[in-house]
Every structure is written in structure tokens, then in C-alpha cells.
Length: 183
View: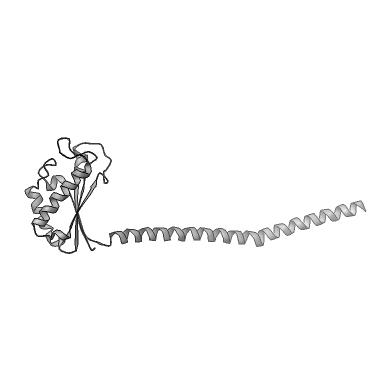
């Protein structure tokens, strides 16, 4: 009798193991693979939505810009220390006058390196870039752009390229950007 119960126990164990394997292979694995596939698809679509939302942010922030142009200081001024417009700079500004009439707001944005020129009278990069932008704004107003439309913005060293100090870095960092905005 002891051998019968032992054989019956082993038989029940083997039937339970076989039933578990059948359940695992035919019910659990397909469901699990469907879940994994769905999770991957959700991750893919979430990534696509994030990419699209980033693209929409970029489009919406630039949507109010009607015209934008950027010049280095050496293109507009005779020297960075004096910040006097050169003849070339005056002709450049005259050429863009028609585009400046296309919108209600004209921003003149100045930026420069971390330290203003040593021989200059400015205490900070903010003052230096503001003075440069104001010089260009005054010239635009003298050319006929209504003063109520013109805004002067100083970015100081916010657009600093991070390159080592020197003449090449100064040319890249000292910039005047003129932007026409819809509002």
C-alpha cells in the first residue's frame, strides 16, 4: 500500500508539472510577449510624442519672428572700443530697412564676451553690449524706423561661446542681432 501511495504521489506531481508547463507555454508566455510588445510600442509612441512636442515648442517660440539677422561688431563698427558705425555698417543697416518695416516691433540685441575691452569705459559685459545695441538702434531711428517700434536688449555674455579669449573668440562673441517680431 505504501508503494501505491508513493506512485500516486509521483504521478500527481508529474501531472501537476506537465499542467504547469502546458499553462506556461500556451497561456502565460503568449500573454507575456503581448505585454512586452505593447510596452515597447507604448515607449515608441511616447518618444514620438515627446519629439513632436519639442518640435512644436521650437515652432511656437519662433512663430512671432518675421525677420532676423545677426552681425559681428567688426562688420558694423570701426572698432569695438569706440563703437562708432563704419561706412560698411551704415550701408548694411540701410539695406535691411525694408524688412524692418514688416513688423510692429524691432529688437536690437547686443551680446559680447565675458569681459568688455580693457581700454573701454564699461564696467560689465551687460553695459558694453547694451551700448552697442543702443548705437545701432539710434542709427536705425535716424534712418526712419519709428522709435516706438525699437527695443534695445542686452544679453551681455549669455551667448558666450566658451572658447578661449582672443581676437577670434571676440569676433564670435561680439554680435548685434536685429529681430523683427510680430508682437
